[in-house]
Image 1 (cartoon, helix red, strand yellow):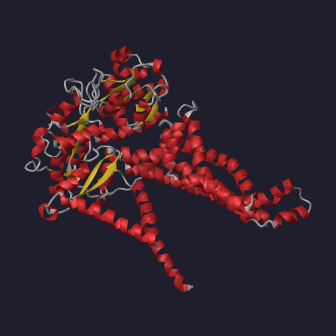
Image 2 (image 1 turned 90 degrees about the vertical axis):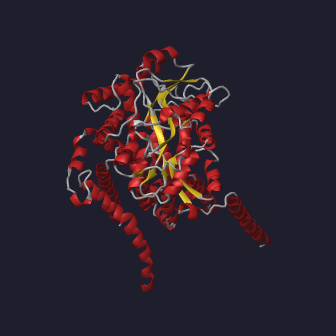
Image 3 (image 1 turned 90 degrees about the horizontal axis):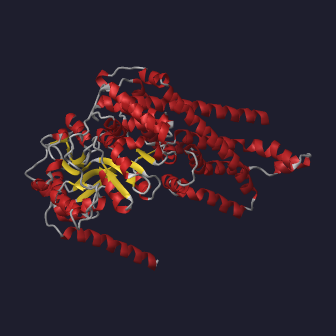
Length: 360
Length: 261
């Protein structure tokens, strides 16, 4: 009995300590200031710095309800099902779709004063030309990650995306299990636009992927490829630059190459849904994420390229965590690089073709 | 007793909200055209025609059934002797054995499948073999526990009677133990076959992604392709296939009972 009392007492103490320490830092009454004291954030998994949320919570004297999604489509489905969030971090094409369907609200730039700190290369893209609805969070491109000791650098650099059809590397490759990215690679390898809706070109891309499936014995995975490449399960795959940067930092045999034929330049950006319960605080949150400290923490922890120009500079220059890491800072000077555009008809067609590719 | 009947009400409400209404929504989605709102909806059979017109979908369905079938057979072949041996032990050892068999189930299935991914990484087995290993590993405990439960409840006097009447131990097993354990095997089949036919993360994780089963197909249409109507149609077709297979197993069960009588 005595022990039980002791346990209960210590538990109460811990709760009290946690509660009290959270309140000390800010005197602002969030309800009065923002109309609410809970912010619902819906973000990708493994996509935030370790202390970002707790620092925001104590600085603004609010609580953050943080949930995770693993694909834009899953997020969209949840949103359509009537869930309320204050902040989302979808990718470019999904933002375009959300804007088209009137599901977002314009940002309040009188609150987001840190917008000046943004890296210009990530702004004013086709999905949201004036950045009226979105502020970039992370960005990058897609490239080939390969093991220098097993894959000949000359092959990768001379063949570009076609290296995925080089039978010398049969059984050694990953294909990213997402029709959008796989067709991007195939279309770029053939010299077409990744946003094409020309059926002949798509058919050709389909055949390109079938050839990979039939001659290369690839393994179709998504995030499993990260550990797989670090631990040498396979020797080559195409990856998002942020994941690639992490792989390169963990295994020094790994290299990153983006073919001249072009690639996908992507952005994941923060938006506020039209039905947000707490838009005022959401704008404050976006502003907070743009600060040097929060952006640095995010980029440092996750390995993706920051949208904050100064963080980007510090990370990739001498002494930075991603100095001489080819995957961290994506190029912005290749005319063949494109932004993915939302196209409902194409999306469905590609999903079906992708199932056929994997079954061929 | 009558008063206790009201206790069923919470379950009834739960069942309607979480089982019946979602089922009806699936049926509804499967029979309407894509992209029209509730006000202008048009009924159609196109979603089903599309499934049967393209050989790829049938292929995936047959493959799922084949894998689930073979998994179930392997589970019976391994599970029955295991359960039989356990049922013969002293009661205390029985409890420990059952505990040991169910122990892995306390850990999340996904985590265990990830572990298998690591174990099989360097094995050089074909993706199909890996999927079988993962499936049998995950579903075997259900089979063992079901069969063990019926075997341990069996009245041992039947066996003594059989021996008295001149059966040797093999005959006693074939004529008494096996027929009496059929209900356990049947519920084991239901518990293994049904989740196996619709499982989607085991083939996804262990089959290297190129191993598409019907569960993966449904996932793709709901999540990536965003075509809920076709996804719902596939789910419905799958439900019907499962109902048919359950009906067949139940029939088998009844026939056995009639035989015994």
